[in-house]
Length: 335
Image (cartoon, rainbow, N blue to C red; front, side, top):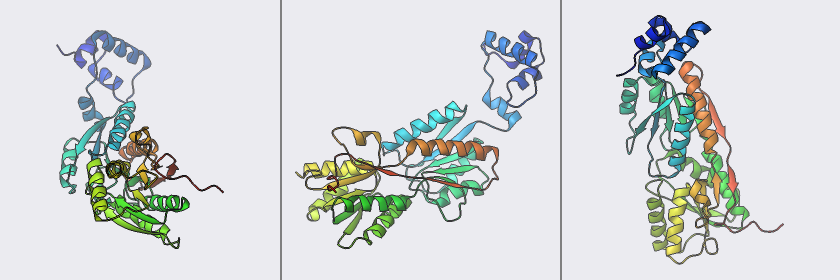
């Protein structure tokens, strides 16, 4: 039979309210009573109900975790870090898979039904308006991997994707590449738009360097491979490609090798993310590292803070990227 709060109170020789206060964060209870209740609970194998305590505290310790790209292996790392980080704080994620859904109404309704303490929208493709819908519904929200705006309307943690595009262009030009190409994810994705904008802005500062642009249908291996195969069917490849994501790069690498082209001998490839498999010997992808562990940790920190102080001013935490040198680009020329 299930051990109840009443059973613990009887074993400890205290009132039921004393047991309830012992297991309610911030409630007042004497140290002597606390020891008696904790000993009785341990002897009986009692664990307090989170749902029951939420009626007293108004906090469910549930954090909504919303995303829309489960085809990209990098999100295995993202969700591993989110779930571990939340659980270490005594919180529990409530996962929402958007698939192709872009209307926030259903997600807002679902997460309000579960009375989550806060929501983390983990997506680099959803527009700022998606997260803003939670704030307008008075659900505390953090947009992880989000797009910063001039005046923050919700908490945002991520990178400056425009600057990442600039960094990619500088990296390729420094290696002597001039006939370049951008192979991005879905054209409507904010991350794709911003990375392409930065890439073009930086190339405009380098006479003789130029780039074409094309877009995969998704941030996935299959989409990257299909887009590169299409490009190769239309003519000679560019000297080097900046693929707006590692998984697109790996798909493009597969298509290039199938076509008998050597990377980096014939074509250079640069990705973005530095996902685990990018470093596998068979792939050895040169890439731009997005600081995923730091983004996740900052997002959890903000989610906890915004759950406690929902009316605080929104802030944007923008972290820096760096180039990871591997084997899909020719080396920098000697000084």
